[in-house]
Length: 590
Ligand SMILES: Cc1cc2nc3c(=O)[nH]c(=O)nc-3n(C[C@H](O)[C@H](O)[C@H](O)COP(=O)(O)OP(=O)(O)OC[C@H]3O[C@@H](n4cnc5c(N)ncnc54)[C@H](O)[C@@H]3O)c2cc1C
Image 1 (tube, rainbow, N blue to C red):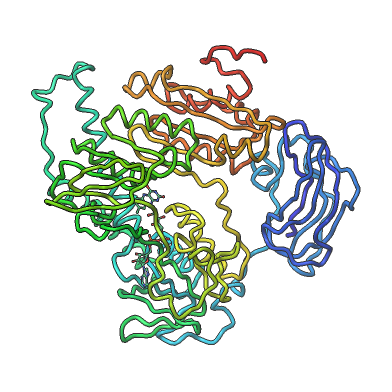
Image 2 (image 1 turned 120 degrees about the vertical axis):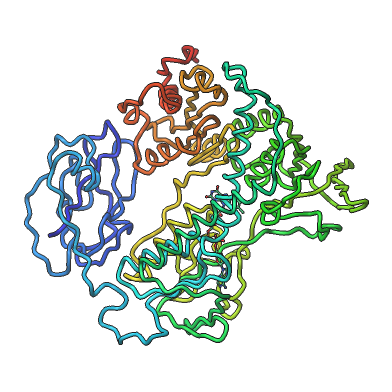
């Protein structure tokens, strides 16, 4: 059945919109996400994307016409399909822009054109030989294993090649090991506050058994990587272990074996970035991969790079009692974060004993008597037993040399469909450098697999990807920082609420930090949410969902947040955008 295109309601006040121009004509093929038309509400011009793929069967309302919101303006469906016209969407619907809105309003939802077997890559094609696959995925990290399973779900015959351990950087030497150790740091913080809460431990003395911390971390990793392998096998994905050498004809050589894919997904991820300064080759300079397996505690650690990895790992070691100094080139740690949040975190970490030097770089490392002297470019020196190099990551191109792919600043260039310059070869995840986060890699892998299986129909929209730092307190963000929002929009509103007055936070000894919401001054569209405080990494997912759903501040405030919860602080920060936070002092009128 054909799907209706309706005049969207783009804000609480919008009653009607004018069709400026249809960008597609009747009979045109449209893919989900294609721009269909441009409309104007009383506030702004806006391009409207297709929410389904098919053929634009009919344009009901023409360029220049003004149409009440939720009224039908066109239809998308299968080629040659007859339309049953006249079903006007209810004007009672407050916000009806998508089929989900219609569902929520209890209205019948038109069915999307069915995806038939014919749209799958393996349909209507020559049968595959034993060593041939619909999809060969190279790299078994988040982008790769997600892509492989999604392709298998869609009916593909799939192989995945991994040179090391399945689960990639994230499970083996990234997200999971660091969070296992950061939980140790949190437990140690708990010991410190116990007495103040009336829990008298026989002694607050402790020692760290380094072997046991590493063994425990390894057991966590093993559980999860085993789970990934199990899932791949359960989805009948064929697993190959070894370096995959990929060729332009879509063959992949693993040792003496060669397999071939109709389509290839390169999900080879990233590796530690290195700097070329004298002394960097010292064995006492560790990467994040090395430090996770350290079984002897150094007395002191110099961290080169105050990004997420440097700060998280620096905090782990500082919590164990190691003398940690962070050296960061930018004027603040984790410079991608909102400035207020970054400065607050810096203050909290300094109180925890971490030394943080900003606006300075390391120009030379001298190793002598089993310790390092890091010479900084402002003339200072930092002496430490070990150093951690954490200045970022670069794409992993080993095995891809024969492809001669188009690159963008040393990263594989991909289009919106995650496809490289070679048709039928996709490159999701860290290897394309768009957003080097595991959950972004999941999405890119999923999108690449769908496009490889069905033809390029789905774009990876990463605009509202949340990011978190798992320090204690946690830090998280989604969308624009205040600085970026001001530069882009000029007139913005900022709402804040602090955890210092939040019941659950006070009851939990977690009453520090705040939530900051950035909104557009005119329509109260949410541009960014920044949190430093308890459960920030969990709460930010709510903010990401709100932004993805394009809720305005006014709409969000119609929701009720449970009490007592940390999330109430986020709700109040939204309310503060409009000067309506109950637990904030009244805003002074300008
Ligand atoms: C210390 C640290 C902490 C992190 N913490 C977080 C976090 O908390 N949250 C978060 O979202 N992200 C985190 N990240 C980032 C996250 O790990 C990556 O964004 C994510 O792993 C990228 O997934 P991917 O599949 O693109 O690549 P990877 O995970 O790097 O996987 C690529 C895989 O491909 C394999 N491979 C490469 N070349 C070949 C070849 N030619 N043949 C066969 N196999 C090959 C590799 O061995 C690897 O297993 C962290 C990273 C680090 C280093």
